[in-house]
Length: 285
Ligand SMILES: [Zn+2]
Image (cartoon, rainbow, N blue to C red; front, side, top):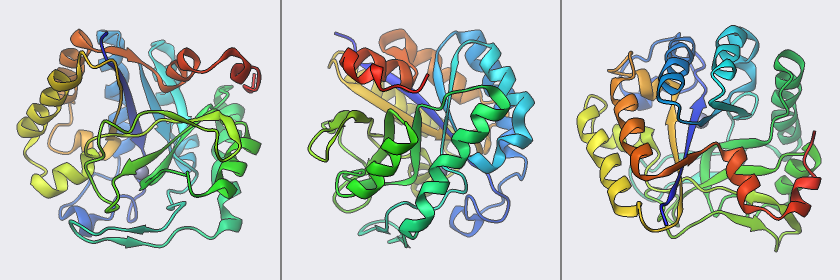
């Protein structure tokens, strides 16, 4: 059985804060979100490959026309990446740059999840079904039933929060596959982990300009897992994708290559395909 590829774009540029340009080590275009959305709509529209856009809430109103254009292609699910891009859990990397990031105070988390849902509904009529948690975490939200309770109350169906290994770093093994938060009391919420390397970290560690090498790394992963009948949620960002490649040439090449041997879906369609019908009843309609 072919494996399934879920492509998810975290669209998040906030001038002066996301990404930290000191960490990137070079300037990142301030208009990365607008440039990316414009071009990615064309790429997926032409290739007819589905993907999910995880939009930062605070940038929704500024990019309505571009988001509408993405929706019009029929290829995109629009979901969210929280309102302002603060970590929901504390990160303590034991490898690489050994980044430490303090998690957001619990009382502030609900607004960060609820606000983008309101905005997507108000401006685009979209029922948001999922969230990518900023920075991702070891074990996702397995150890945070209090945050899962918020996710559940807000009516989300899936979270994409497990992207780091036990050293709070990368890569995350493909052995970590989507799972339901059943033990925590939320059997209708699916975790869809991001395996391998988050694109930003691979490219930070190996060189931002090495787009050809990164492309080869990704296609190598496609070849390795294509017949394993597993799920791979791949992440790219607005700003990483356009850095050294404004026209998204290598992104386009990667999608064309991967979609030949992997089944491609939006995260939301994947949720529907693997969850029992009883879980769908809880969906916000
Ligand atoms: Zn992010």
